[in-house]
Length: 433
Image 1 (cartoon, rainbow, N blue to C red):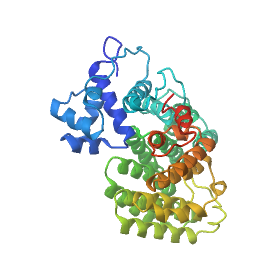
Image 2 (cartoon, rainbow, N blue to C red):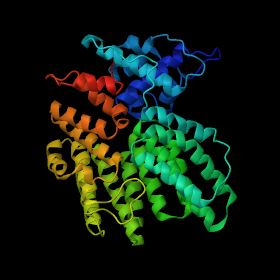
Image 3 (cartoon, rainbow, N blue to C red):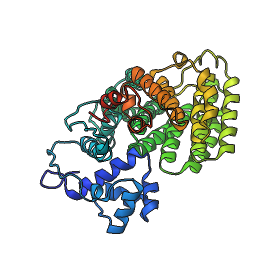
């Protein structure tokens, strides 16, 4: 994102401003483009500083993003050092946007030197792994499996910075190992490569980064080469989430349904457990598309599949790679489904049945806090929204710095009632100082 002279150009600043605001509003490039007559690829070129929008489209972009036109047209002309990364530039510009939106409340923003870890910072490392992979020496499948298990532990513990730091080396080693093997060992290495890219996609999705697309594509390609149906299901799940985020929910639901049907026909317990997670993801995707009947039917099918699994109440005998299939997980997904459908009151009973300690990982506990925060936010209960965000912060400090949760925290600053501790939470999580 740097000009030939080593500084960020005005056009690049404008593009980064638009991208930061779009991500903060959880919009896809396709959705923003639809509002102003551009394609998703054109929005991508605008955000990368390659294409300059005309005056009328720029007005429509500003209106869609609920930003003053002058903030988009004339972002603050800070000169950035040549070694500043794209992720740091985006973080700086997001703070500028927050400054414009919160000036009336007398809130100051974090200085650009803040070094707090965020999923966005960590996901930026995936770009290098995609296009300039580390030169790595192959290793044994056993050692590769141990490295992958460590990376998975970082994800499930919501240690996104550590995961982002480990992924480039893991992906380089996994791909080098695969390239040295043949036959069945090569297929096993393909499975390890796929799961490493699944983690990379999950990390990118946490920050609503567009790099999730190529990462998910790499995961699926490696999964197909592995010939392992469970690994294929894991890759299909993250690809479908990426499709949903890109404004293609119907295609995502179709992919998840087909893959789940194939896994259930396999008959293996682990395959059926993965199929249940795909059905839950499909249900949430359909809910986001406001397809109530499909969402309810898919969740019902998922719940039935989980009930038929041994040990679904106490926990699966064979933990899955990212999301497990248990009755508690079903309740967790129901919260998100009902909230997305606009019936958050129906989610309360499911939330009440969940003991966060029974969720198997910190990442899932944080998801519970996140979904409850959204549920209470939709119900207009600001104090319980704050309590859910505080719970998320306690169990997973990096999770609460995600753009979506920062937006919820920012909303609390404008709540019609005073929320003790809201401003302090906003400062701790990078929303304000």
